[in-house]
Structure formats: C-alpha cells, structure tokens
Image (cartoon, rainbow, N blue to C red):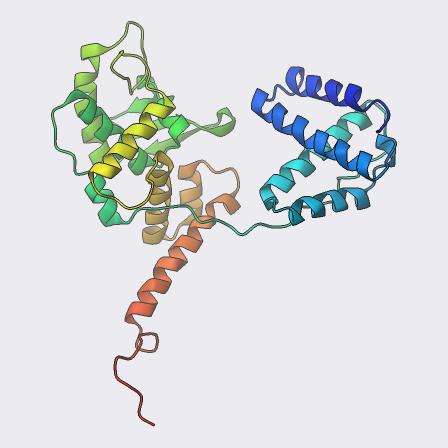
Length: 305
C-alpha cells in the first residue's frame, strides 16, 4: 500500500469540499476512483505514490476499458488521478503528475433522442382551461421554443421574462446567463398561464412555474408531467424534458444551418458539444436522399440478365 495512502486521500477529499466546493456526489465519485487506483497499486506492488508513473496509469485505464467501462467513466477516473496528483504536487509530496498525458479511449457517440416536427405538434396540441394543464402547455411550449434545460426551466423567476420584447434571461451551467428569444406560441401560452398563476400562489413566491401548493415546481414534477403528456398523445419512446431541448436544436439547425447561433441559444461553452446535432441533421438528409434520389432508390423491377 502506498505510504500515507488513506491520509492523503482524506486530505484531498477535504480539499475538494472546502476549497474546490465540489458537490457531495462528485466527491463520492472521486473517492471511489481513487480507491480503485489504490487497489491497482496494491495488486502491482507499488509502495508509494511517488512510484506511480504514466505507464501504470495507462495500464490502469486499459484494464478498466477491458472490463467494459465507457470512455466517459474512464476519463472521469483519469481526471480524479490528475486532480489528486496536482494536489500532491502542491503539497510537495511528488515531483510529477503521471496522469498528465494519459487519455481515455473514445466511446461511440450516442445521439440524443428527438421528436419530429409532427410529433411536437401533436404534443403541443393542448386545448384546455384546467389550471395545471394551462401551466403544462406553457412549460412545453417554452422548452421547445427556447431550448431550455430542465434546471433552467424550474429556476425561472417572473423577473427573468420580458414578454413584450419576447426575451428570456436564463441562468445555465456555471451560473452563466444568456438571453434567448421566446416564440409567438410560447408567449401566448405563458400569458394564459400567468393570468391563472396568481389564483394559488404562495406568499412571496417568484417562480414562473408553480405546483398545487403555490410553490416552485420541482424537477421531478416536470419530468412526470412531460412523460404523461407524451403518453396521452401516443408519442413513441421515453419522452423527457431534454427531448424537447434536443428537438429544438435539431429542428433549428436543420432549417438554418447556423451552428454558431444554435450554440449561443443552447448556452454551450464549446461548439463541439453543439456539433452532435450536425449528425442528426445529416441523418435526416441521408433519409431524404435514400428516399428521393434516383440512384439511391431500390428498384422494384427485377434486373434482367
């Protein structure tokens, strides 16, 4: 076992909590990853943290890959190792970071689920005067109109909206704010909901979307309502709030071809995150090509010898 193993891991986890202020869940993942590294060191007789080198780290990553771990999970393990060794460097316990130049194997990119324009139209074809259903329509329209994340939707306050200017101020990942437009249909749905919202609003509540208690609606409640509406409309697959965001991005890119604009609207820090929608766009074009191009269509007539 490396000298001072548990002591240094404990110190590092305390550092993540007090100085880096990482979430409990993230710290738990890092702790588990470092314990896996510890087990690796014990198995291969590595007696001290200073003796771990880049070859060992590559071997550690390769073993995880052979066990079926995804590239993303292995990358998180490598991130935990690099972070731990940066901390040991700061404390002058080691002279280098063995994980610095080691990268995880790439995983196959999973394309996001999207709905067709027709399916979106079916989902949003809600005509009702019921309080909660009026609210649900406003949520659905806004998620599809503006490409909001679920966390962004539930955190919205009335001060974040300017319906006259058709603009919305959104607080996204990393507490970054961005302005996004609101579509005409979403404006109408929001106006209908805001007229009813005050009927059961808790004192001092500023949330745009509230539940029966008059308090801010939670993430789980929105997920359940979206799923319920999708089932009622007979839509395929497991429709969730992020499906509407993916559909927004895919349909907008398909119509405009402007990747940078879609990146800004989604609030992606890196355009490579947005580029996944170009794969969806290509799939759509490929289907159109296969269906329409004379040299792509399968002939229904048998070929003569």
